[in-house]
Image (cartoon, rainbow, N blue to C red; front, side, top):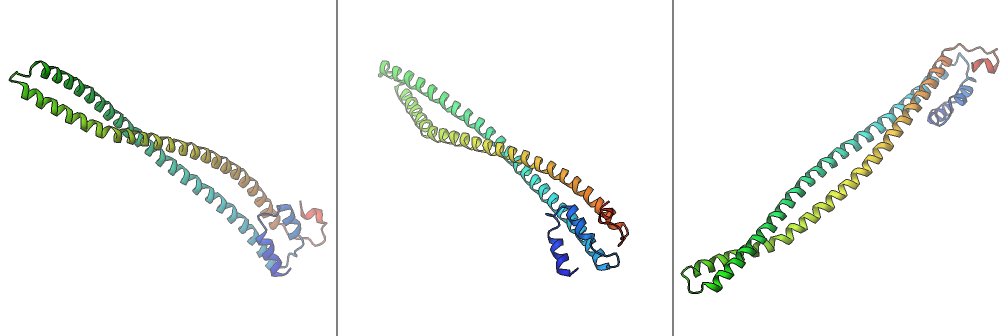
Length: 211
């Protein structure tokens, strides 16, 4: 056989069934040492391709698992930050109610005690309450905005995590399928090794060569 033919067979090993390869290689003579070498080369090519595919799937699965862990940690951090923001909002609301009560109380006392010696103190208290209320009102929209943003980010990470879970399950199925494929190919390789190790009989029938 020509060297070019062996190269073609080597390149197509993965896509051609072992039976076809067996029939093709059975036409070679036992004395052709180059042919025996090419048989071994075909076997090595098949084994390397199986190892490469297994390695690729393993790397992809590991990558998705790392990314899923990172997203889960990020979602946990966002949830903790959201709880903190909720507490701040609740605290601001309580301060606003308290300041309104103080303002109402101060206004009532101012109305009934305009000539009282404590009028200046009440006025100062009222002004302080108004300042605090202004600060709370100024901060409140930002707090609400941050809370809404955190909710959206948590939702986005949850959706991404669900998608990653789906992709990981698909990868696991593909890995299981690839494992079954490897078992089949290992059996075929064993058969091919046994067949290669048999002596060639030029007078034997073609059927006996395939046994």
